[in-house]
Image (tube, rainbow, N blue to C red):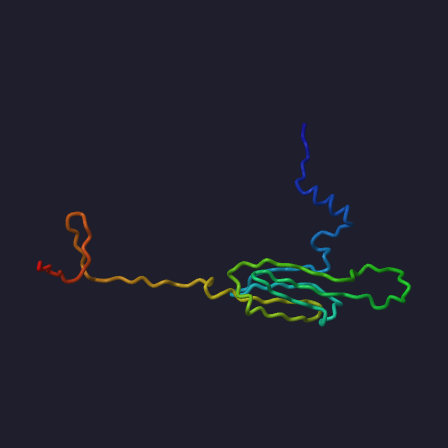
Length: 154
């Protein structure tokens, strides 16, 4: 007998139960990618008042929150499909990012966070030192290069 097992069925059931509001239904869909020496996070937040956007950093956690309000409570709504309210996303970033240099911009409904990779985490070359002084081995002990000293008993 052949059984069709779908490991994602539980997630689809959850989406059906919540009305299809998985991670993308948070009101702040996000993309995260690395571009050269920076990590960029972009959030779709159309219709959000730029003054309501709050970005906070604590340790290696970045929290982004914003609010989209309804135009008027006195209106008689016929259809209300656009999400409204307070939205928040919390991102735990790697320690390899310089969160002190985080830059944020909001253009055409897209909030962008640009975070540089920390200098200590960037690829670098390490030079190798070497000496031309010969080393000798005596009775299984390695002798350090340099002049030998005589010991005098007093």
